[in-house]
Amino acid sequence: MEKARQRLLRDLSTRVEDQGIIQAMGRVPREQFVPAELAHEAYEDVPLPMGEGQTISQPTMVAIMVSALELRRSDKVLEIGTGSGYQTAILSILARDVVSVERIFSLASAARERLSALGYNNVTVHDAEEELGYLPEAPYDAIVVSAGAPRLPRKLIMEQLANRGRLVVPVGSLEAQELMKAVRTPEGFSVKSLGGCRFVPLIGADAWSEAESDLEA
Ligand code: SAH
Image 1 (spheres, rainbow, N blue to C red):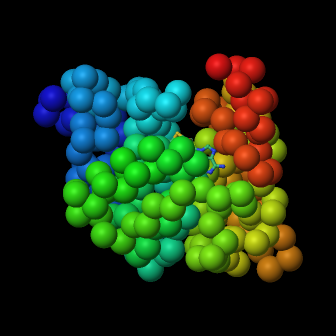
Image 2: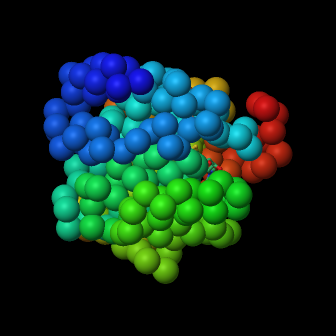
Image 3: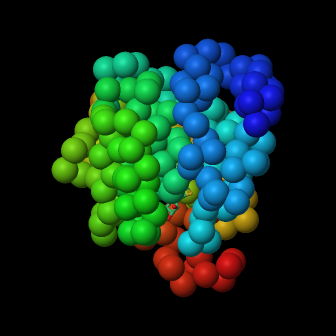
């Protein structure tokens, strides 16, 4: 496993410029976030199933998304879609505070326990509510949406992202999306595409309805 880990970190370091992200990824034991029977695949560069029909993001995709957030140590970050908590742990090393929301209660509580057992203390995992994101703690310097949205979440950007804040979100159909990056300005925001990707659906307010997302399953 150690060999696979070194190989993965080497590959990742050719994909993103910020080596601080690679160091953070090197410090997070991904085998603790994947189901025990898949631990031997923890350092392959692939998404892995985590139960409840959800997947733990591929390490390369995590590196690309986190890199697009341009994090500073003083930043407060919102993550939508905690999942296993793997990306949450990386964010926790790179930012001041991480607020993460997850709509599947069993995943949220497992991630909460795992993150606290591993000593990631600047993280709070909330059960997702009706509203997309987590308004009580807004504004955030960076927001990462780890599930695919049908359209750009404008309300989230306008209401929860700080001025100059960065948001990354996959936008597209249920089958394929484009990773979009928005940067908040005093008047609105600018957007650019970072390329193709494939995520499980973002469900709820301003996203897919449960019925729509089931058509895919
Ligand atoms: N980055 C995570 C992967 C998360 S998969 C990891 O590495 O483990 C996407 C997660 O988003 C799923 O767990 C799904 O339940 C959650 N999700 C979908 N819609 C959501 C919403 N509106 N609010 C919060 N979480 C949501």
